[in-house]
Image 1 (tube, rainbow, N blue to C red):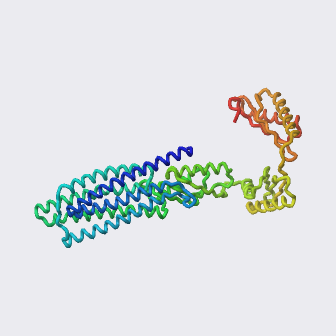
Image 2 (cartoon, rainbow, N blue to C red):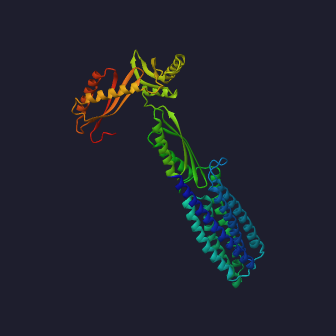
Image 3 (cartoon, one colour):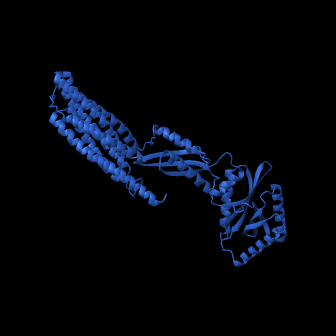
Length: 484
């Protein structure tokens, strides 16, 4: 995906989150004013508690608006993981405010229930209308916030959606309490007159329950707990990730997995043990597969994969010798291992820059041979042939010789009617050795036995014409697919 497309998606996500948060603030402001005015006019603790709850929601909505403005800012020098934690901090502040409002409501309810203070209510139709309007508004904004939070993985908007979803039930509780109180006044029932403060207590319980749920999730995010997905716990999500990573071909073990969430973004730090004989390209392929496995569980996660080269039980002696050379960043070839007299004997060729002094080259070889013996204690002797790696550009005279060899090869190939084409001829030289590589086109239906015989005959005929060539490598290809 292009940077322009990514930036456009980020801008659209930010605009959607900001719009939802702003509408929530406006709705919370008007609902809070209506509930407070109605509660003060009627003297209903249930309505006053609801206005306090809505006031907390107004503050929370304002904090949410601020947090979504800040959280989508890109990472900078001072905040390398971005500003997503602002959403977690916002949710934590909301939790503290809701807890404070619950304590106040409980205090007022206890005074009215046990000390019969302020039980007289001036009931009329307005509390019922305000509560009905509040339920309708809370339902609409909770649904809108929930959709935006789920679409953009916003912790702050999800907290607001949860708040306003519970507001519906708390408003219903107050509505029932006011209705029961009105009946108590009409029928002169003292017990029914206590329904309003009891409803306030129910509201406080709802607030406490929501606060506890929010506090757990918020604290987990602030402490970088493993993100949970769906109905799974964070621990189960981590176990599933380790299982998926370990199942990737080429991964020997998952040595470490750390995940965290910051706002709507996920981060993962993975250490994987891989066979040390892998090529760099294969290691990169495994890294990409590991990144994809994590992002299937944690969408768009920023994944860092650290690979640890590890020896495997399936390694051959040749693999272990090359691993020792690889650690020293040395290039060896034509490694030969023989076994006699109950021990292993190694012969190898080592390429070193042609400008390197003999003393330095000999020191490198000595260290390499000592490392190989530590790697494979069964090795008794090592004979290393030091070759100089040319550091100069090939001269025109050498290029002309290469063209002559290619011309000779094509002429020899014409003696074999089965050979349809010779292409991609490459001549290489290592010190005093010349090697020719080429691709050879043959009929599709030619049996492999005949293919081998033709190639062998072509090699022998060419070496008779060009005895200076020490090796000819031929890659046979079918006529219908001779360019791979």
